[in-house]
Length: 413
Length: 88
Ligand SMILES: Cc1cc2nc3c(=O)[nH]c(=O)nc-3n(C[C@H](O)[C@H](O)[C@H](O)COP(=O)(O)OP(=O)(O)OC[C@H]3O[C@@H](n4cnc5c(N)ncnc54)[C@H](O)[C@@H]3O)c2cc1C
Image (cartoon, rainbow over all chains, first blue to last red; front, side, top):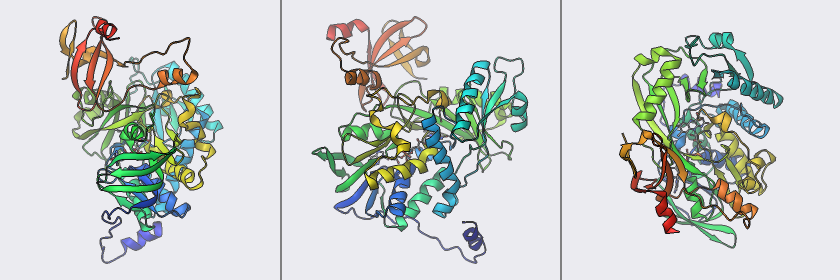
């Protein structure tokens, strides 16, 4: 990757390379049909074609490539979750981000700058101690820091001394970082396309045909295709797609809102998050301050924004860094998040033997794009669910063995 | 500002209300299987379209029902819980 970048930089001309072919006609049959051309579906297509030699794959995307939550997320990448099962899984995700640019020969701008979660009271500090110790045991970098360390890690932060939101310490996660969301999706798409995966944009799945405990075909607005295996990776529409296959996935949809300010010179190195303020911030490599993430208070399938939510986000950001009050909001948006009862994803087998689930990514799935893609490709290719994703099975609800991560995702990412 | 019509207090700013989620029908505690209990606890209505849900007007602590389209976010109607009793 660095060498090819150097070679590219020294070239005299820069011919335009079409990474992804124009949408071809649909064939009547594919070994694998992937519903949803977001980061997850594309990553799975990449791993199917590169690791398992399966090239007869159609990625079916109703809109444009990665225009769903992949395009809307605030790109927090981290593994400092609460349960050992989640930490092991997200740790693999973070590691795959470290190798991604090499793997895809595509600059995904992964920047491992560390993430700082702030505590404004003692009870939050106690929960951070538990998270740090569980994390260390699982082999990730997570430690509790005091107010002095917070000040050093994050100069310019309003410590609110003596105030009701005084910062008493934090959880420092040196493995945390961000990556360029579009690059991640395009990188996977370009690699998969190079190996013969067909990417069908503006191809909406309208129905899933089933017979004898299997999914037999997928009906789209451009025709019907028979599929050996099917993966559901539809982001905010996962619940609805599940229904099309006769499966009721325990998901409720809520919009999640975010926004960015105009660019300013680099000042904020770390990712900063406050659970009490329901706000987190990161400065993008363009200099914009990305501010997330407020979930709407009631269920909705809509990507509209509301002034209430933007005001709440702005208030949190201005509290943490008062100078942000002088900045203008450049863009604002929302995505439909598919929330699960325990704030963990639903991955792996479904009641249909050849239909696989990559669902329930809610407000937290961008960081899992590579690991979910890799592990679901393994499911599809071998027919077996790898141990690392077994805790996230759909049937955990019927057996009351939840993977509760509500506490680690309360700041909505 | 979005307005919700409270059956008791009339049209109010939606920020005065608390969302209590879709109506769930509890299984018979004597007869329900584990699977039915799990479904009751973890599955909530989320079909694109009109759903029936509980809301609370916070200031008056009045709990009522609404039929709302969760795709268009239009409220079809709001009504008092006794109507629900009568519908059974
Ligand atoms: C505001 C916001 C901030 C977020 N911040 C973070 C964060 O900081 N860190 C993090 O880890 N996660 C974050 N997330 C969550 C993250 O964005 C998602 O979990 C992740 O991007 C899911 O990827 P995906 O590929 O599964 O889904 P998507 O990217 O949504 O892709 C699904 C695709 O399926 C397509 N589709 C839907 N229905 C059909 C159909 N019928 N036929 C064909 N195609 C269909 C859609 O058009 C879409 O492109 C955030 C989400 C939002 C909304």
